[in-house]
Length: 455
Image (cartoon, rainbow, N blue to C red; front, top):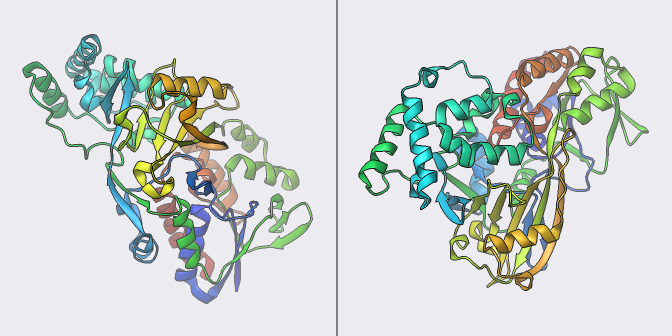
């Protein structure tokens, strides 16, 4: 019997155990190592005075990506609420429906609308529009969406979130998150504007147009359901991986205990895993250089229990984007709109997300500034509307998809594979993806490992 050790008990680690148990049954021993005192990774939820706070905005969408066996056994057993996305972009005191590139013409600022329209007209007659060799986010935004859309939303929002040069962000890693504008759609937008006709686009366009969210318990309910279907795997909590002997296949946890393995799968933050490996095995210089390009966005999530909400637009809105630089945060999520059970009756539960930058750029903001901005955007009238505040800091909120990250990822995977080590998931492989993507990645990896483990 071969032993498979999984580092991390988040959505990817638990999904790996789920698929391993069902694929190889009694042929393997699975051990999950988790440094925290509970399962879930970034999909934890905490209840405080009747409010349920997630660690950031998480919903379950793109269910078609998830293998049927997981949907039938896990997803369908979640007591969940189905939603059609209600999201807006707040610009110049007005709420534009998301995605901005489809609905900007609804904004009352004529200058804004005119610049966006002129930008679209210009790219229609620009040969660069048909250039499919674009490799970075900034060029894509400018050449495929036009000057106005780039100026008012796409560039300021992404700069606010990533705090990184958009020319150095890999387009292939991010394209699925940016709704495209085919030529025929651009023509319809221009025609709608010029003829002053009513909106012709559905709210079911763009990224994550529909999704589900647990009725009770927050997003951690997903973790709880998965754990019910992991019966044969050993889960060791409060255990931090501290060193790894690649040749001997020995993992050291808590600086003392040693665990041998046949196969190791890491889902923990890639930068931490590289440091663990380097401590005992001394990684090649080339891999140490790669580690310098493994950077992420650190996030402050301010959980707010609110006695009331000022502007009616927020009541049923799931989340709102804030691209303007004079507002300290980039997104506000209304958890009560996702499920009324996330807050006491008559009150509201919200998350305010503030990008704190990365290892290259730091950004500091005071709670008073955030509260002042919440009053400015009319989420609340004054401080008295706040029932409680919960601060949540996430060190590895968004892996930054630097240009060339796919090649770097392949180099790392090829190196570790020779030692029967595999990387998986959002943080394990260092890629910007969704919950569904992580579950699918776990399924694909287990499928590839089946013959490897059986040999």
